[in-house]
Image (cartoon, rainbow, N blue to C red):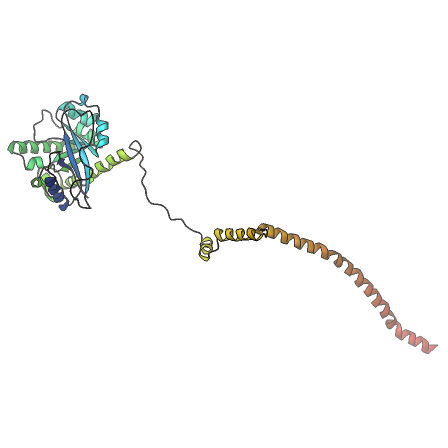
Length: 336
């Protein structure tokens, strides 16, 4: 995804020109654009965002429009309302014009996420590695607007090239954002042209591609987290609800139409008929009691049966004795 976080906007900008610029950037592959409102001087007493949330023209469905504010900063001690300003816009950038403001934007101030420099002027100070790398390590990105070196006059182009080479040397190409700041379609360039243009002035191709994709994406994500999360640290992301797993047995009862609802209906019918409802536990208890009572009733009959058997055996034995002694009696009778 490609980003262009500096599309100039003002209350006097014709909507047709802005629409033409946005449409051309979208056709070149830039999917996230930021309408930039430049504020000079002191902040107004009532801070509002004049950029409309919905543009007055149609935008492609794949294009995202953000609202950005760039504040020109000359004396950092005179602007104490930067948190209120950053809460109104999606992105806040500072454009320092003095060395004091430049050092404050790099080392002290933390409400902004971009340092946008006007590279067409000659600054009375040098771009040293320490302040720039301090800002980069803190998550602040340095913006380079290539239209300043494309449509400017000879003096502006000379200053732009020398300032770009100094920034490339100080940062070694890290933490840079490449934007257009094109007021019309003539200043817009394709992504490959921007990378080649920066490579001529000393920026590597990989760093140039990061300046169009990775680095601006980090700015957009961080600014979104600052405004939607708890103290810019914890963000709750909706990842979708988990599907509720229904047990197989329960699913079968639900499919067959026998569930809690059916049981409830049967219970209601029993109550309406006047018959008492008996739970399964009570039925089991009653069944065990019946089995126990049956065992107790059958125990006396079992005790009486052994005595009867003994008497029968004795009677059988008595009848069998004469039969056993029958040959001896016959022999005695014969001898007598």
